Length: 307
Image 1 (tube, rainbow, N blue to C red):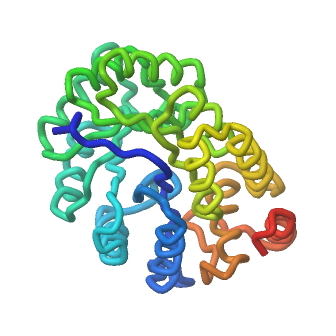
Image 2 (image 1 turned 90 degrees about the vertical axis):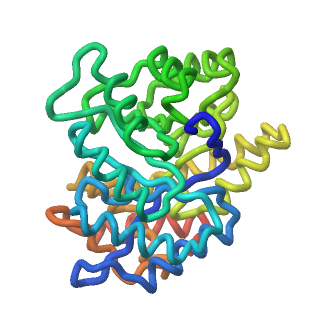
């Protein structure tokens, strides 16, 4: 089943708005999702890194999906992150997502107990065998301390275990090799880049789409870049990517903060400054950005014409 599922285009990893009491802000969530869907995106990825999967209890994960599915109303395919340390926990999440009606699931390599040779392939095969949903591998070594090898990913795609890969590794050489091998195998997998500022390069290499967190802020430009790529207008692709690279500076202009607080914190702050979110509250123990950091992000948004 996995190899029959295809997705392409722009699939934002959805940022989740929180009310001041820490609950999900349903009003902002609906405004946020409808804004991206109206912009012409091609799918929704819930419970990714930007979607607070690492901070969410099982109950909260289900709530994020349930509300998101209610708002989406079947308009776009839904991918759901099933991120956890080891295979059995991932399978538990995947079965829960299956019950909630998602279209595909996304899993990383195992982590904490770092896998040795052969373990990663067994991990993905076990998930695939346990759940009747297309499975995407999420390559994000900065978070799980394991780089997924392109040869192993291509093999898992060719055998039907993987329906696709979300590449957030930062390894453009490995991604290029994966694209080439996937093509030689008959293109069984959808290959998506997760990097906001080099999407043009991934498209040039042959990526099937992008999963950019920055599309939460400006989905219109990512959709325009995808359409320009489809039309072969590489000058337009580069021009849009240059603009988006400047916009991504919202994650670079803050001081005294790093990691999740600087990245997703900047996304939430930008969405609040744009009037889409009501707060920029972050999951515990991460503090929301404030003061001069908010002002710096606001300035970038003004320069980009988004405020």
